[in-house]
Length: 438
Image 1 (cartoon, rainbow, N blue to C red):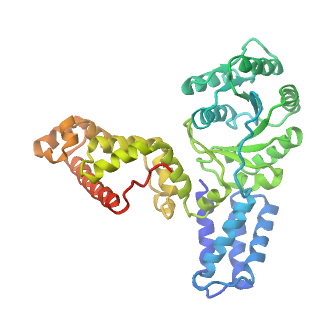
Image 2: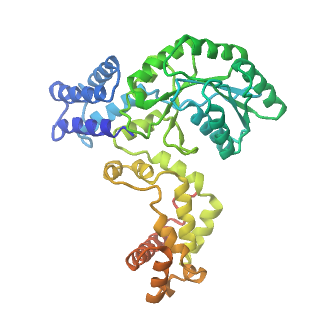
Image 3: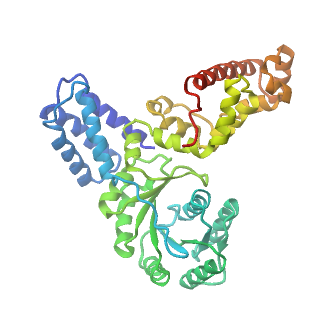
């Protein structure tokens, strides 16, 4: 996410490295390079120019504190301007009405259907809602089936009428169905086209008029760059949507859409899709995104993901075991399962300040824990509880049973021992685990 832009900005700031103070000359040189970086990321030219002009105005004449270097001060100003550019604050969707009606819009291939499933999953698991997915794409043969598959995966009902060729009628019936079956959120997945056309616009405008949605979201593929911004403007002129969803932000995207779209349509970015899994959906926080663009990580999001998986009772139980030096491989395996639920390992590491650049060129498989899990599962229950029992013959058996070798088994035992000591030290010093729910 934004790797190319982050690298370019980092190189730009190095121009100021070693400078004793900010001057009009050295800041102009730095911002010239920043503007190039933004343009290369497919940011709108006018927006890039306005952005750098604003940074320059705020940087010139600033007193550099003794605790700061000019480079650090400029990074802070750029961070604040990036946050402002992307909307300053996160904006939630409007969950009102009974049921709340959410209308999806966007071009074909933007990820509307997948996002509909992700949003339903988020509302069900994190907001305690009972959503209904509605298929009104009567043109794409696989659209209804795709929504049904997604609904089945997250156990959310899907309303569809294959023989009905009137999308407005389908949407109206779906709302009545939701009222009868206590579904408090209706998510309507509309049809898209390969490009903006009058037929699509007229149809979705008719659906809007008929169902009077509480929220209209425009879903856009962030890999389409500046074209995404132009399309957003056309949709907004016709629909006056409430917010933007950026999909495929985990792909090889240059980031121009995220940085430009808020200014062009004056509507907030509400969600970003960060992967293919149905839980790979994040609320959009402008300040956190600015942190990530500038290579500062996103520790707040990291902690939030951790807190979703680590509950207080488990933390207390584990803390007691650690304090008594009873932390064993069953506990270790349990922690691995919880970490895996937090998301892609490489993405998680990139959230830690200073780690993004370190892991950029490292390939970390989603099954990074596969061998570790196999080794632990090849142990007997007694061996998991008492790792000191693992002599040479037992290790050989475990290696054979897990499809690994003695070296990997010994490496895991050493890592486990180091982790146990570290956790015991943390427990003694702080009296609590780092992931205890607030």
